Amino acid sequence: MALTVEVVCEGYLRRDNGVLLEAHSTSSLIVGGSRNILVDTSSHHLRNRLLSGLRSRGLGPHDIDVMINTHLHPDHVGNNDLFPNALRIARREEDPDPSFRKLGEDIELIPGVKIFHTPGHTRGSLSVGVETSEGKYVIAGDAFPTKDNFDKWCTPMINYDMGIALKSMKRISYLADFIVPGHGAPFPADLNGRQR
Image 1 (spheres, rainbow, N blue to C red):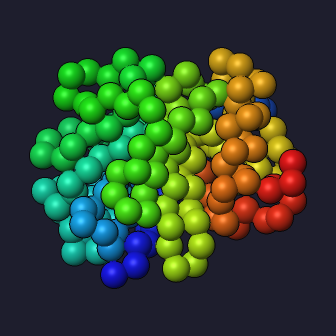
Image 2 (tube, rainbow, N blue to C red):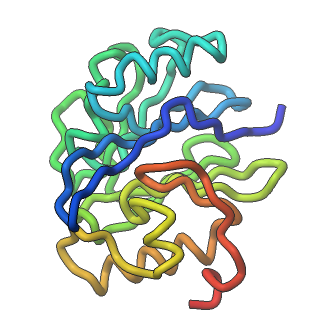
């Protein structure tokens, strides 16, 4: 069975005159492999939306085998507690608690699913590449917070190093046919993105 990437909870950012008022991450499900993999669990505010998204696919929290956090900001980990049986994965630079598998290098989790370091927003930000029949999806977390960051080619507003953030954006846009941003729906990574 081919791998697919499905958004089970579409996140969003709400700003007023450039001031961030709300942040809720997108949660993505990777299905079709040997395990059900969830990337980011959104904020506690969207808990019911996340559970509903899983239920609509015939899944509950106990069906999630692996939970990957792109980074450990509260709007991306707010529902981690729903998945106590899942293998938890984050980069070691995020200083995750002992319940996590701490990655220090890029890995292929299962055939067709690769986890790779994309720092900039945080030192330990990671992205997940998924080979599907439609092309390669990259679940980018806040390396691309929104589609707007891609369209305007601007780094995340919150970053520890703009140059490093830009390198991660270039890496993702070169690899991806489709990008799942940290906050929003998937979008095609057009050829212009590959040439930046």
